[in-house]
Length: 300
Image 1: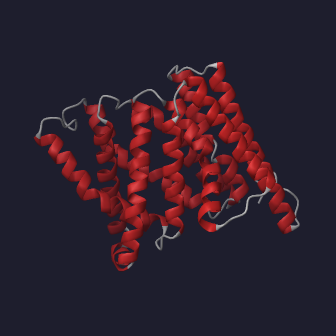
Image 2 (image 1 turned 180 degrees about the vertical axis):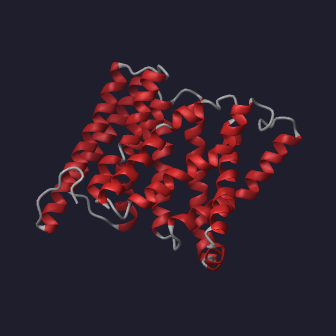
Image 3 (image 1 turned 45 degrees about the vertical axis):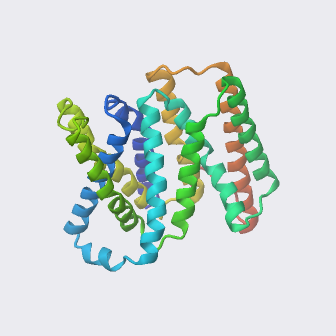
């Protein structure tokens, strides 16, 4: 069971890690239109699955004013995250986008401290300090704040925070999120078509199919991750999650030939050091709390 879970997790993070290849094929399409298609086709696909699996009634009865209010906030955050990421990839900024997902776990720690009064242990403070130094170093060495990385980390971290209060499961939750965004997305796409700026059915056949497939590539890794989460130890998930930004970083440098200068290497190295400290501290804290040996990679 755990072996299957690891495979599911690797599948999810690998698909996410290959996203730059997918979205870069659509760089001629405005990012906002891509997000409109991603939302619209995702919602239609999710509704199809609900109908086929005969869960539509359960989904409808799970809705409430509280749920809708929470998922409105979640929908805003995830759509902002999607837009920022797609915009970055289609503008040749894959490396900076990968930085956002490297620092996201540390940002989540800070949110836990602010909103839940969680107290940080010394090594956790050290992790945050190294990551902060890394971001500051990148800012001064390049003369500008790595805003794409910070927006991605902030929106995804806040999205996770909102979801902690969410009453629905991951599948119903994503259906509601995309459903709340479906009408605005559809109206926007129709307006683009009416004003002659729409890309769908006015691009190459491949690009049209990729726009339709945006729903599928959004849903599949989320379903794989949902299947992996209950089967895999958190320590393993914590390590596997870095497969995604690592793949994106390598694609940005070696496939898309984005600059990775000595200064950028130093900044990233500081962030990587913070993540190593973060992981070691987490394993040590779990050993002390549980009185069990520190688990190896993949150990249950």
